[in-house]
Length: 421
Ligand code: PMP
Image 1 (cartoon, rainbow, N blue to C red):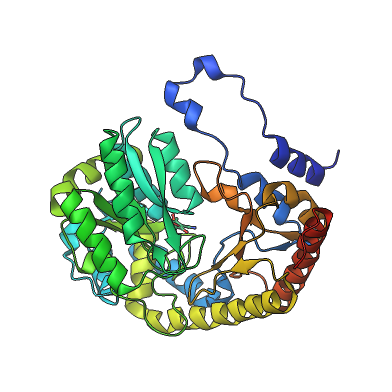
Image 2: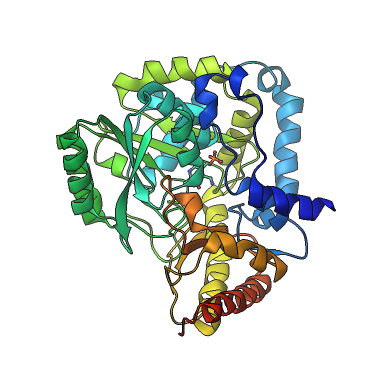
């Protein structure tokens, strides 16, 4: 078998684990992400990958980055290549407060903790809050990387219904009521209000206010994950939820989508009462975030027109979003529906319920297109007739080609089940 069919085989079967007896109990919950093996297949050059969420770094002037990195080592090497503070570099924490001000947040640098991407912040928050069986509320669907982290801490993940405008406040009220009735402990609500991953939807200001009220009065923390908030195509997104509530919202930010992911710099802005625990937890996992990466980002923010750079990312993604929506409108079967994002990277497609998008992956790969099946974004096996498409990375031409190929695969699936439309 060649390596690409190996990858596909692995994706379909998952290798069995044989060290079970020697692992800690919690290791049983460390499962390979449904999409990791898929990405190996999707990265083959002949495949149009509408699967990954990799930012498109063609918008970044690499010579300029090279200059920043070179100057950093030459002029500040003694500090940049040394250990740093557990909470993060004060200059960068101050600059982060300016970045967050764009979304209405008034913050003090003392409440910012720099993390190794926002993924590390998800891990730290889970470590501090989740005992086995505790409930974490999430949107339906939700970010695969967060679901994986919550699962490792043995949370009971409960999805709350969303629609074209994000999480539905009444559904949240109902979920809290029924979980409390069952005697379950709810630790926090995790949500991505801007251009959600994977659904692409935006939570409007009135719903933000309502959700803030519900969570405050029910004493449920909100973990607001905001990687895409500055990537709106038409108008700025509403104020961050953290802007309206500094006591009950734990805010996560990252430079992965607005600068580059390679430095692995994210942050969390926490209520004062939580800061010490988070810093201790972070020190025990990484001692300190990379000084080199932090100072590179700080140099970039201090010397480059970063707002203009974000605007150029937005134009690049908007062209790709338009290409994907036009191709879906022109070619996809009428029985399917999809979201129309106003920012970010993703479109969520819903097919007729008879279609199993996970079983369809090998046929899509054979047609040279990859996507992520919907079940990856649910902790409970739901989502089997949906899928996520990303438009961030391929060229508009490749996006059109990929959507056309996928349309044919979906049509064949439908006609083999006697579905019309
Ligand atoms: N949250 C969401 C919603 C994401 O989409 C991602 C990256 N795909 C992350 C967190 C993690 O980002 P990073 O660790 O690169 O900051």
